[in-house]
Image (tube, rainbow over all chains, first blue to last red; front, side):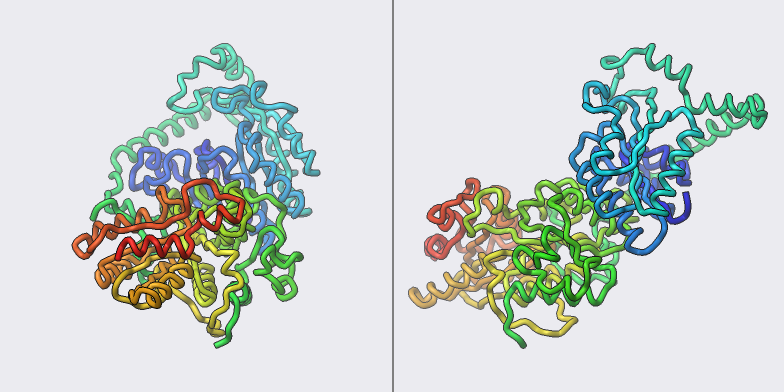
Length: 287
Length: 325
């Protein structure tokens, strides 16, 4: 990715946040609802943002970010940059109407947007075989004359190559792409998902054993002699230490004060010296 | 000052702001080649070209969301809904995304966007084309909502909305599009949002209204003066959020009797909130309970005979006003 490329995603946004360079501390603090969080504790787990890193959220409604990503691609093209927008989504989002409307405009207007379907096989507790007709999901781009392809998420090189091709298509031809990356999740959909009703423990174990992207890449690097067991242990320890430290940071951070509840709603109320409107904008039930 | 229509006033506002700021674009169904379904954007395609005046497919969720995404990146799109009723298929983009992104990002992301189009009944087009969503747009913190009722306000408030750094919903009215009035030609003619207007002064009764109901209220004020010697003050709210609470309280304190008129349906309509604010802040100034006239509480009727009765009309408003005197 280049500095002109932008990223937007759905609610499963922690990985993207770390990938674009957000600090683990600000992310963890956001999860805790703390003032030091990336959104000052006002967005939460599903709504991380870092516009300074071209990262535009973190969106809670399934499929709701797909027209936004389209708009980012439109803005990039209008402003004459060579950038693209990578718009991530889950398999469940492919059944939302806004996604098809977005594909239509993306192709019709030649917009440099790349829809990346992270297909983990389940939309919440509903497996792909129960939620989608006409697989593979990426093929839905075909109806709009959009280049599409399906890739194995456990093969890092394959994914990198696919993204590279799609980025080139966006930059050089201003054309959209739909990439389906087949992946998995080990945990339930959310903290409210006991994960006991819709899949087997064996299925999870099978994936961990054979298709874990991190383990497979580790093995490759071991074979190539890039990594050693000592280095792996050091990397693991560093990652765990960073996570522990960020949890401690989040725990020690203050909650936002209730006096800040009404900040960050309107630009205008946050910038009173430049305010042009008048009148009452917040309505309290009693004051 | 030239006398022009409400439609021409909107056209002037759009034209001036698109000229002034290269980030402003107009997009929507039939806004360019067709010249706008209500001819609000007539001549703009010829003046600014197809990159600034953009025809979209019938795909409200996509083009509304596209505009929100572009606004997050610093553009200032104006999105036209052929009718505000059609915005209902783009609800998520307006109410979840445009309204909430700033808050959810802790103030890091702004959404300088205008959603505009007609939101009114009275044209016999049935329930799906006659919604007046100013109440639930105003119920959503993060959005601003305005309902200009005159050509001058249409221009001055539209320009203010486009220059605003927050999302603004502009609720226009197809019946008002042909209304004529004097409109300043000054390119910096701005009417700040949140400032109500005394449409006519009076001492015996206040009628508080917004949108086309202001015009109905003015007709009733004339009848009451001529036939009953009653002096009515009409307050045009102009802006729902922000709301000019001070102007509301001022007229209540002056006349001590209030009739609220709106085209919204009554339950949780804008005037439900206004009535609450009046009793909370000016209870001791009231000589009678606050009364309301809204649209009759059923889906919008198609037949002229029914709809003309359903929306606030001269006779219904007059009868309710008489109850207060």
